[in-house]
Each structure stands twice: as C-alpha cells, then as structure tokens.
Amino acid sequence: MKRIVDILKDDPSMVEITVKGWVRSFRNDRFIAINDGSTIKNLQAVIDPEKIDQAVRDQITVASAVAVTGNLVESEGKGQRVELQAISVEILATADSEEVAKTILSPKRHKLDTLREQAHLRVRTNTFGAVMRVRAALSFAIHKYFQEKGFYQAHTPIITGSDAEGAGEMFRISTLDTKNPPLTEEGEIDYSKDFFGKETNLTVSGQLEAETYAMGLGQVYTFGPTFRAENSNTSRHLAEFWMIEPEVAFNDLDANMDLAEDFIKEVIKYTIEQCADDLEFLEQRLVNEDKLKPQAERSPMPLREKLEFVLKNNFKRVSYTEAIDILKNSKPNKKKKFNYVIEEWGADLQSEHERYLVEKHFKCPVILFDYPAKIKAFYMRLNDDHKTVRAMDILFPGIGEIVGGSQREERYDVLKQKMDDMGIPEEELWWYLEMRKFGSVVHSGFGLGFERLVMFVTGMGNVRDVIPYPRTPGNAEF
Image (tube, rainbow, N blue to C red; front, top):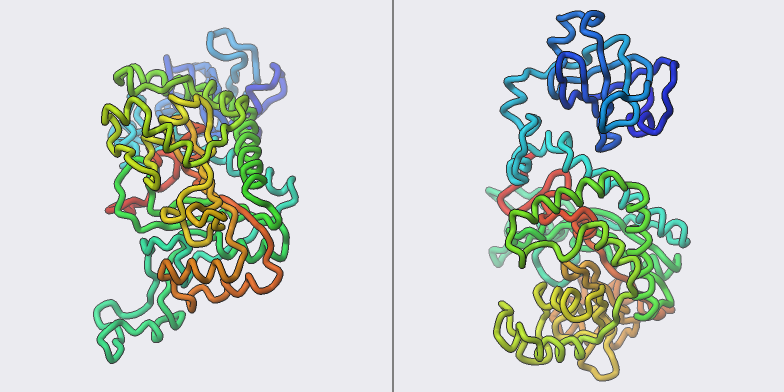
C-alpha cells in the first residue's frame, strides 16, 4: 500500500494498486475524493456505478474509510494530474451522514474556535492537517540540525524541586491527601512526608540541568515539555508547551547569537522544502482571513514571502540601550499610541515594542542584547557596568520575541551574590552553584518556544491552534 503523497507523484500505470483513506467527498455516484493524511491533496478515485454494488455505494459517505483498488491513469478532469480508475471498493469503516453533519467533519467551513471544541477530530480538516504536518517537519528539522552539528540530546527532568525562571508560577506535584495533609508544628503542609520528601513541581525549563551536561559533553540540547501556571488566557500562552534549549561550553554571547540565527534559518529552510503544498494552502488561508480584517491588522507580507524574508536577511543586532532610545523617540511613543509608553531606561519591553522595532524601524529580524540586570534572570552573566547582563532576545515580524537566551554566569562569587540579592535559596540550587567550582567555563544557551515557531511558520494567529491538545486556564479537555 502506498501513501497518496507518493501516488500523486507517480506516472500512469496498469499495475494495480490499493489506496486506503477517508472519504472527503463523493460526487455524482462516481467520484470519490480520498485523503490519507500524508498530503493536503486528495486522490480522486473514479468508479463505474454499474460495477460497484448499490449497497457499497450507499456507504461511501464523508468521513467513512475505504480501500480502493484500481489502476492509476491520466486524469481527464481539472485539478489533478492522475486519478485512480477503480476496480473494487471496500468499506473499512462507516460514518453516519447525520452524525457527520453535527461535527467539524461536515464539508462547510468552521471557525477555529469551533474546531477547538472538537480537538479529537480537527486533524482531519485541511487546516489542521497542514499545521500538524508542518509541526512534524519542524520537529524533525530541529533534531536533524543539532545532531548534524554534533550536539547530544539531554533528557532533562520534568519533575523538579527548583524554579529555573524564579517566577514561582509552577504546577505542584504531590501525592499527599488533599483533604487531610500532614502538617508541621507550625501548621504548614509537611512536604517531607510527600513522595519525594520535598516540595516538587513540573518544570518550567530544562536549562539549568542542560548546563551541567554542557560542562561534560560540550554541547547539548533539550527538546521537551515545559509547564507554566500563568493565568494568561491570551493567544500566545499555553500552560503546557514544548521548549528547545541548547547549551554550549566555551560559547560567549556573540557565538550564541550566531548559533541561534543559523539554527532558525536552517529549520525554516528545511520546512519550506518539505512542506511546499501545506505552506501554499496555509498562505491562501491567511489571505482569505486577512480580507475580513481592517487593513492595519492584516499580515504585512504573504506567508511564504515572510519565511523567505527571514532566510535572506541578516538579523540586526541592537543593544537594549539603543532600542530604548529608538522607542522613546518613535511616533507611537510620543503620541502615546503604545499601550505601554516607554519613559526611561530599564523598562521591560512588551510585544508591541518588539514588533515596532522589527516591522517598522529595522524591517528585518532583530536580536536585542545587553538587557538591564533587574529585568532578567539570576543566571545571566553580569557585564562590567554592573547594570546589564549578557542576555539576548530574537524578535520576529508578527510575533515579537521568539528566542530568549544569554551567556551564563560562570563565576562562583558573582552567581552566589546574585542569588542572594534575588532571594533564591542556596539550598535549592546548591548543585548549580557548586558546578562553578569545578572548571566552569564561559558558556551560553537559549530557549525557543516550539509553538511560537510553529505559529510563525504556519501563520496561525493563536497558539492553541498549533498544538494537538492545548492546555490553558480552565481547559484541560481531551
């Protein structure tokens, strides 16, 4: 049995083949559009009603599964190069037409939020079939890139006793009786009686553990699920998402920026090559969607042009200080059009500021670096000015920040002081600090939220539409 994506590339042949898939449509009692998930394109099978029993034809309904055996011939109709001249049709699984009409499998168009309500079926639609094939290609491209560059994948823990980001917005893990937990003499929950003997959570990042492995293996990467308990019901946030986090010994911030830019360009390039039909469909979908929006809210350029734009342009490297000056003097800021007006150095940049820099000012992807120490994590290397750290964020059109990274603080005394200043208990991260005693060298890394990358490449506007089963505040269906 061959996949439809391969059959559509074949030349006509009198060799019998069998195709299995789901019916997308059945017209005039003759033409079956079959899709098996391997491509956005359907294969048309043509049957002779006089040779296929009426009882079989009655079961060829939308969403039913069929096996069609026949010969691949040159198509007489428009829209396809070849079609299958059917000899026999076997019904593998039926689908009741009345039940199909109640779901998103019906041929009419559905809104994306409607599709989210039937997440178990939405991958059968054109849009989500395309998105998930692109997601799969990106995932493979990421592993391919790092493996070919000599990186080792590190499987960092999902259950952790530390908060890598210092944010405190984590999901607690416990086997204690929620109605009658053991208590300490002070009346607090006694986590020493819990499964792990201490308070534990789902991880927000594998970075800290990956750093330890970079100190032994040289260059490693993680690619796994992470969890944030932020009560953010926005189009850019999930409670469960996937992160890619490389860590490289002996890399300073400049080398880190080089790696991140090369990495992003290579995985996008691979996906463009592998997913041409899906990207063409998603681009047209975006064009149709933009027609319903005000001009100011439409995409600045077609999807595939935007991807080529990233590949062909060097990322502009700009210090945070220079970016603040640009933003302070910009028209939107002076006219108070920004929701968050930039008034002074030290402000935490918002998505609107990041997109202005990329889309309006520089008109290319931007890497901002050397951020104020007060708005960045404790593990970022302090600069000699004692005001900024060796941090970097990559900003993309239409999305804002897509990568965050830094040169890590390798100096024991400096890191210990920063942890003390930020109130991070040494007993929680004693191993991370102690690593600095044993040949700790300059090293750097970054984190890329996988779903943000999938959003950018597919043109989807909501992060819930680029992950199979989104987990968000108030929603853990399916």
